[in-house]
Length: 112
Image (cartoon, rainbow, N blue to C red):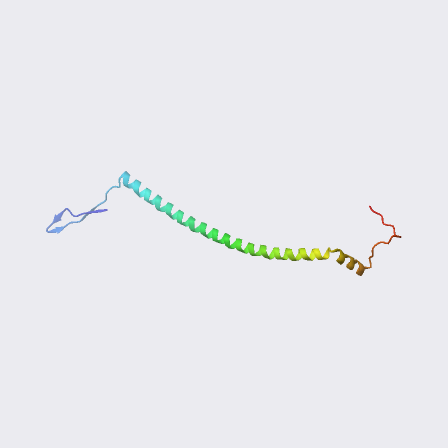
């Protein structure tokens, strides 16, 4: 809308409001402005969402790294325990507690 102050009547100005038709190039500029603003908004929202996803992924990764270190410690302890249980001296000692002894030369040992 454009105000036209060209008419004067009795020493007073008459204000006419004329609607001006939007030309093709102005409509194109408006559409391009709307598209540009929409694109910028989508870019901003997607970058914020991407940042949030990266941050939550890094937090999850840090938690899993702590879990991994704990499991590695448990694995090391279990390996040492297994190694001590499979030691020959320990097996002989536990077999003695169960009443199992090595075969003597007079006993027959058969293999399958």
